[in-house]
Structures are given as C-alpha cells and as structure tokens.
Length: 73
Image: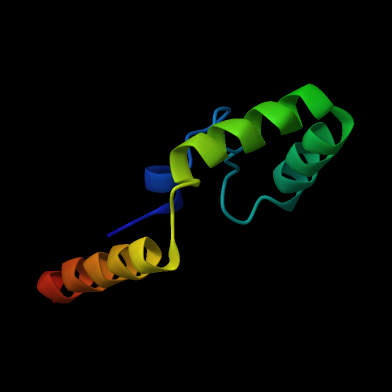
C-alpha cells in the first residue's frame, strides 16, 4: 500500500506529522510560515523530485498504484 511517508521525505520534501495530531500539524504549518528558508527548501526539493510530472506521467503513476492495490486483494 502506498503511504504518505513513501512519497514525502520528512524535512526534505515536506513535513510529516502523526495522523490525528492537530497540534503537531498546526506547529508544522506555523514553522513553514515563519521560516521562509525552510519553505523555500521544501518547495525546491519537492519540485526537483516531482517537477517532471506531466499529466501523462501522473496518470501512469495512478494506474500503477491501482494495479498494485488490486494485486493485494
């Protein structure tokens, strides 16, 4: 199964927080809003990793995810 931590690299392409922890989520949002260097770094690294995603590439990725999920059942 594809999970968010499989896509986002914590502190590199985004910030991960524990599911359901609204305080941790709020702190992460505030951290990005108050730290333009961190915001720039995260967006730059995410663009490097995912910037080549065209609609065709994105559809293929989603197809692969569905294929993988269907094989699990």
